[in-house]
Image (cartoon, rainbow over all chains, first blue to last red; front, side, top):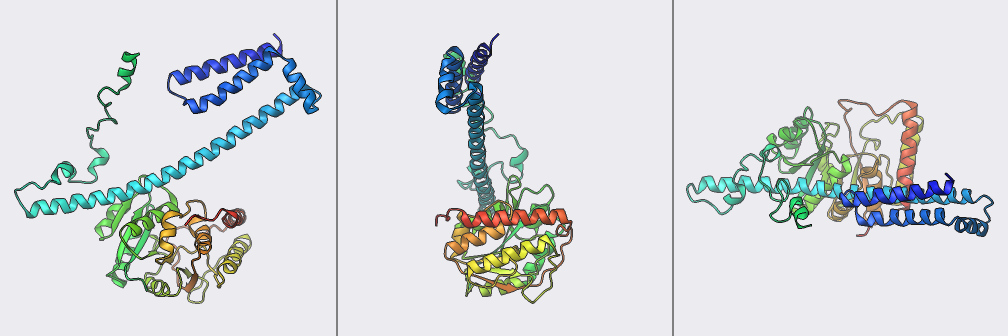
Amino acid sequence: MTVYTLGLVGAVVTLGVIFEMLRRRKLREKYAVFWVLLSVLIAAVAVYPPLLERAARMAGVEVPANLLFFVASLVLLAVNVQLSSEVGRLEERVRTLAEELGLQRLTLERQVRTGRRAHDESSGDKSPDDRYTAGMEDPDAWETEELDRPGIDRPLEGYGPGTWDEAG
Amino acid sequence: MPERPLVVVPAWNEEDSIAGVLSELHAVCPALDVLVVDDGSHDGTAGVASLHGASVVRLPFNLGVGGAMRAGFRYARREGYDAVVQVDADGQHDCAYVKVLLDALGEADVVIGARFAGAGRYDAGRGPRRWAMSLLAGTLSRLAGTRLTDTTSGFRAAGARALPIFADHYPAEYLGDTVESLVIAIRAGCTVQQVPVVMRPRYAGRASQSPLRAAAYLVRAVTALGLALVRRRAFV
């Protein structure tokens, strides 16, 4: 088996893995596009080696494989830097959400408290707020209590993973 | 002096000391609103704090002082406060100086309670750690156009001008809540001033004294300062 066959096998396996991950929804299209293009490029070089040789001659690299290694390491470096930056952006978003969650929770706790007080004072008549505060007498309860939340614990009607398969 | 100041206490697993801090605050200035930001504690910090009459924002996980403080600034902006004083939950800061910091807000947008400024004694150690401190102090003094000696102090106050800036851009990185936040405020046109304060020794944990740690601190301080200086100006 020549090195080019090996390259072709590698490219095909990569394409297969990418496709399977897309199928299982483990990879988003926007990230898959890059890897698919890269695999196709590798396959092209494997099928038609003069492509690499010509590129090496143009770049002034004596051994074509060295050009391949150089370009490959640059590409991998770039991908890693890009992912690091993406992680940082996500961290910043998570941070903002966490802060916002803490603030909203305090607001809600206060509403529950004032709602309850209003309820106690006007004994009897249910205030409209009770619809929202029912079952939340203890603000800590929402950490442990199982709430029936559509879309989180159980899929929304007609939008669950099951319906997707049935439709297909 | 601000009309509606808020005291923000960032707290992470401080159930032993937070009660003392809150009662002290209440004794010194009973009219002040206090917000404790529970930075993802695993102990009873939040419960103890609400028992002592503070409003408590509970963050779902630990974000560090920067994250806790930004939540505090956001709360202050939303609720219409016009100044924020940061007091640490470990009892290191003497609450009697909260009034001093607030008074100084009449003359500056950001006020730092500084340990080296005459009132108290503070041993910054020697070697790399001290170099780092004086490098930070020198650079930031020049930038602020006033003498700053204790730039890493967490005992500080922000006035009406600095508050919305910090609510949007309070860094979470290492030394971001102290050094970089100052750079951000100065670049946004805020004035900075320091007032001398006395600080108590920390209940637990001394500042790192080992030479290796001190050297690492120097490197991180230089990095944080350098980055803060060259970073793009925060959009205000």
